[in-house]
Image 1 (spheres, rainbow, N blue to C red):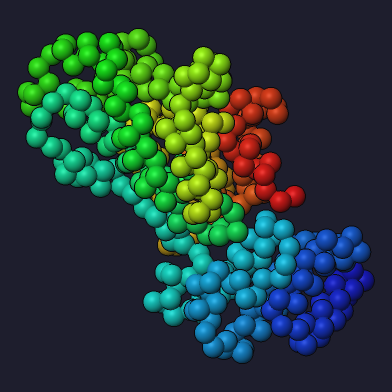
Image 2 (image 1 turned 60 degrees about the horizontal axis):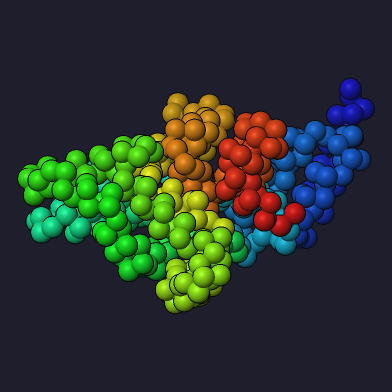
Length: 393
């Protein structure tokens, strides 16, 4: 035991001497190499090595009083991160954050790389207040229907829009802040007008006096009332998007009745996604576009509000007494994936990936293991699986 302790001390002394001549990026490279070297793990555990490198980096950064440390932190430590896989760089980034946080002035700590994350918070109360603002005097049923549909879509996209900490990775359209400015006009121009003339919607418009107070809430209740034929809004919403599917357009093309490209949503969606650097909505994602109207904005907002609180409590609590147990944030994501139907919870999980530093590739891969074997995972969480498979290996 004494011989091993002596070897540990001598090796640490050698390591400290080497690092005196290195800057932060080179020390991080050496740390990666040492932690992955089987010979190093013969004289120290991975935890011991991690502690040694943290002490070395803390002394280096603290003793030099780096000018502009707040700027480096606000830039997510990119100036100090050596090249490497995204998950490895994220681990280095968090190590630097833990070291630099006590060295930053109080006014800088809130805008540095780390939270209180995630930065975008949307509360249920905010949406309810917006609902009051959205209320408009009744003019006719079609306008009431259009306003209700647009309100649901707008609120969902507002909550799901990301303030991404991963600028090298394009978010999917439903998480991309610019998407709403393209999607909502398309819905108004190409989707809603066709609903007005259908028999189911006409029957609904004649079913009661929609001008009475509170009828807007009743219409919203019908919209969110399930998947049966008693829900004519969702039935016609689905039918209109299916009309733009490749299968439907091919059948119409054979009869000479296909829509010209400019009368379909896809060219606009694809061009807007390319211009604004997000994954475009195209025909492959009709199923998720149809689901977006089924997600209840209050549930989406409540889910994100809870997840932000759970993230802070586990990874950046105000004090040790408020620290949540390990894995609580992961369990929270799983809960909301299962709770919000039609992959709305998945959309929240993907927002977490783009906004929460600890919710990196490694974290997400472990999370997906909770959904069973590969075939089960692809059926339950197809969006997450597709995203992980698209990441650099």
